[in-house]
Length: 221
Image 1 (tube, rainbow, N blue to C red):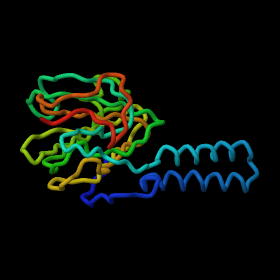
Image 2: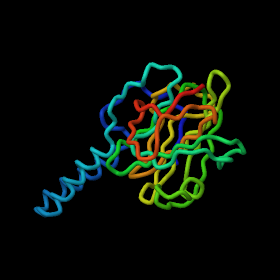
Image 3: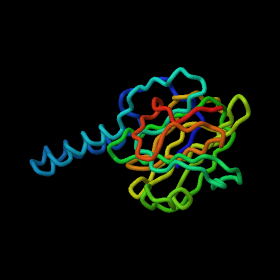
Image 4: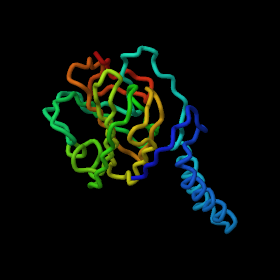
């Protein structure tokens, strides 16, 4: 897991800079193979280079203006919605929403709601498929606790998957964050869990396809 406390720029190049090393490596390999006259391998790595560019795409998003709205932190499909007695990080009863990201989704993660980063808990775990229930507790994950202006708290958890081996987090404790801000990404397929106060009003159900920074998951009371 990589982490730093630098502030996130409001806009970025259409490809996340974390993808540059992968893109350059694949493009360099493509060029070398082309010079060697290895046509089949050249075409394979050319396609691979374009796919990596596609994977690390980072489109701008516009968050809804409603101050009570909670937005999705990730692109993907909602696989879990429900109440849990405790979270893996504290003993509070909370509402849990899990979002599964396939390799075809945008993987840049965004802040669901305005607040201040109160804590970040990193756990170097296993790498089960991210759509399994046990992935929440047992997989490598990075949990971010955010406290809102009215003293409520919620968690956003980046979870590595079967293929994912790199969690990137660009915020640190004490940082003030705004709804829709980019805060990190997970490479090559993964999952995000959101734990909300029990009195939040949930507006999504299992199977819903969501977009980071735009789709409303629910509302703070």
